[in-house]
Amino acid sequence: MGPAKATAATAALTAVGAAALGGAAIAVGRYASDAALKAPPGRPLPTEPRLTVHATRPGRVTLTRSLASLRPGRYGLSGDGVHAVVGPVVADAADTADTVVRRLERVTHGTLEPGAKAWLTPQVYIGDPGSALGLDHADVDVPGELGGLPAWFVPGSRDTWVITVHGLGTTREHPMVLMDFLHGQRFPVLDVAYRGDLGAPPLPDGLGHLGATEWRDVDAAIRYAVRYGAERVVLHGWSIGAAMALRAAAYSPLKDRVTGLVLDSPVLDWETTLRALASARRTPGPLLPLAVRAAEGRTGLVAGHGRQNGGPLLDGVAPEAVTVPTLLVHGPGDTVAPWRLSRRFAARRPDLITLHAVPNAPHGAMWNADPDTYEEVLRRFLTPLM
Picture 1: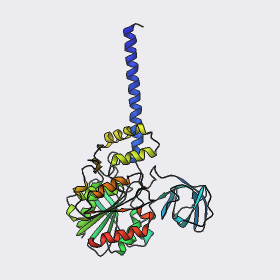
Picture 2: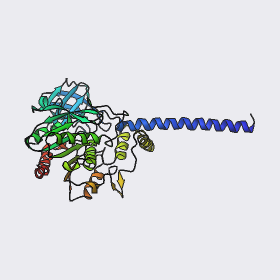
Picture 3: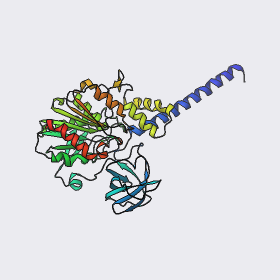
Picture 4: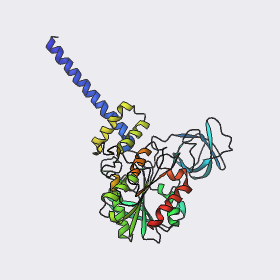
């Protein structure tokens, strides 16, 4: 082979190799970004460890010892075909170096067998407000831009409605942890599913957009509430549901009806959250930019919109755009939506944003870590908005 042919062959091989590497990079980026863009409702996030059930007896369940199983508070315990409710760690139990004993309040579905794999979830209740809580409610259909959105409506005597919006890894069953409390405060509650949820319209491209498009389903819920008698609405969202609520309060044509926001574990910077979920899938750090680039290409999200002058910015929703009283509930234990962003966000609007810190709580589980304190903080916040 002559020099010219050898050079051509080398160039061809280099091009083939680059193309192969490029294809591999795209595949890696897509896989890593799936942790956030294809997070199925009701399934654990990759940050949540699987636990083994070692033993059960009346009022007690023994789980793998980990930082997760040692968390304070009250959680759902879910596995394939089973759901239970567990309370705090039992202080005087005969646990071991590898196990921890928690109070077992009830098994709501299936059978909790030794050897089963399960995970803690902020979803304490399953079913609907009637079967789970004994609350009168109606199954309603909220007209959305992609089709009907299933929702539960729990009536109340006030003309201020609370619209609840679940977040990553949960379903509309999650907000039921607050329905008894809100019902006791006489608020009508509209708990809405959104695109990609069971029974709701599918995601047009099969991908979640971390609230960037889903917020329009919250706008639909506001329109529904106003149509059926709400004079004012308070939006209460968890995780990306909080991001959706924040967007709706800024962009909805009916934003003047929004008189309060409750943001629990808000996703203020989609890029940071995507990186966190991709890392939890054991994506090596040097490959995380591929996940971000893949998400940009697949969804149209733009990296960097979560930051402005060193502070948080939700794709155009700056703290300065907050115009109503806002309760931001978050904690330093959140590995999905960093606490530092919430702290900075609140610091830029101390006149309207109240920050309540919750220690030892994972993403979206601020109520679970300390239900009584959460509800008291929420009661004080809502009282002037009644």
